[in-house]
Amino acid sequence: MNELFTSQRTLGVTFSDAGACVRVWAPLVENVALHHFGLNQIIPLQNEGSYWKTTTDLLKPDDRYTFVLNGKVERPDPASLAQPEGVHGPSQAVDTTAFVWTDAEWKNVPLEDYLIYELHTGTFTPEGTFAGIETKLDYLVELGINAIEIMPVAQFPGSRNWGYDGVCPYAVQKSYGGAAGLQKLVDACHRKGLAVVLDVVYNHMGPEGNYFTDFGPYFTSKYQTPWGQAINFDDNYSDSVRRYFIENLLMWFRDFHIDALRLDAAHAIHDNSDLHILREFKQYTNLLMTQTGRQHYLIIESDLNEPRFIRPIAADGYGMDAQWNDEFHHALRVTAGGERSGYYADYDGIRHLAKAYRDAYVYDGAYMPRRAKVVGKSTADHPGRQFIVFSQNHDQIGNRMLGERPAELVSFSMQKLMAGAVMSSPYLPMLFMGEEWGELNPFLYFVSHSDMALIEAVREGRKREFAAFHTTDEAPDPQDEQTFQKSKLQWDLLTKEPHQTLFRYYQALLALRKHSPLRHPNRETVAVIMDETQQTLQLLRQRPQQIADEVPIVCLMNFSTQPQLLTLPASREPWQKLLDSADPQWLGPVAAPSLVAGDASVFVQAESILIYKSSHV
Image (cartoon, one colour):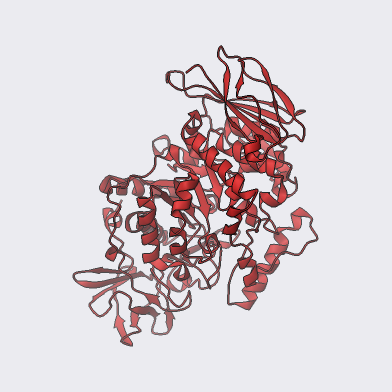
């Protein structure tokens, strides 16, 4: 490993006492020069193997520049930190060391304690900026979460996009506030006790403004992804491509003080080399942590159900710290009465939900009809903190044609039950922005491309995507600005009912998660009993026996539309109620008893959750 990568960024433009150091990888071109826009001057770069480099005192922070390849082609810097005129315009030099941090005392939240809140910068607040997010930090602390997860911020075409069409992985979206705006937000989060997770995309680049092939073989035809050719992590010239992404990953941790990265669609990161790029990411992250003393986590999204991704390096794994578990969501969604078309067709409801509580993966070596093959492997040796679960996220809402949230699809009582099902799991819970008050606006797919052919291709792609759901409705136009505007949160709902009550209910749930045995994401002591006829599920949560001050908790869930009588587990002492989603204080029909005898039965109201703890201490 190259220790220089962890101490400083070497690609693009960096500043030191010697001036601006400029370095760009362009192995197949004959000459490279820097075009300084302010001086209208061409500065030649010297060849250094497959890299081109110069040091100059002419280029200052905030100056704009491009690279001129072979005296003809003029392109933005592939490692640009700012694109003030968009993805097609000149790059802007940025000195990330100029920001004055105040978080020297900050310590990352232990992974097992993460309570995550996913948000999209452009739609989370009316301003749609990092500064807008900063105005809501006190609200998030009041809610009870301790980590925010920000959808991708790498520069994308135009001013509105989910972020997965980014084409400048080092540049922070200008319309959000740029590099300094993100640094300021992270610093403010740390002052409030909030960790920051950043979503990054290392499996593909967006199509518009993608000039990488002009510089070198960043892509390979060996593999195809849903977005085209795969990024070149193991073909000819791959060493420098790997360096590009390793430096990018380290930059977020070191220069922006990001606490964790969520790697999008890791299953589409193709690498058959002896050292998988994910494993190398982990090795460099470990090296950085030993140098800085700061804790960082790597979280992946993957649909392969392959534990090797989250297995420690010492056990021949890739060493990722955790992963999103979509299968828990799918099983919960079907159990809550959702449709069974498209990818939901592989999930049968409460039986699969019970399996997800026990085993994390639903398909862990079982035949999956939609893929027509056996999928997955056992997660037996993996702790609960390695799985992140949710009742909604940007994909599961936004990939619906009309972007409906659960508040539009299920009853108020079912929303409370689904939230309780997530919060009581032996995994790490995640909320999606606005779910805590039952946001009614959709979260739609939106873009702001400038290429008309691409715009039409995106529209047609959305239509094909929903063919499996057999709908006759028209998909909203992703390019239409109104599609974006309709996706913004309605903060005024917090002053209205039932939204205000739902917010207080989420507060109670998060507080319970923090201050009871629910806070420990341990799977080894979980017991699950489900009844398909009743549509009920009992979840017994407790810490290992050697921890004497921890008491068992039982979560009784009724997904049916009728009250169901359930018998509590045998106990020498009465069971004491901790939470009751059917209580009138949460706008429910009737409250369950506060104390229940050790082996008595209790009615669980329709579409509700009851949580009791043993009262022997």
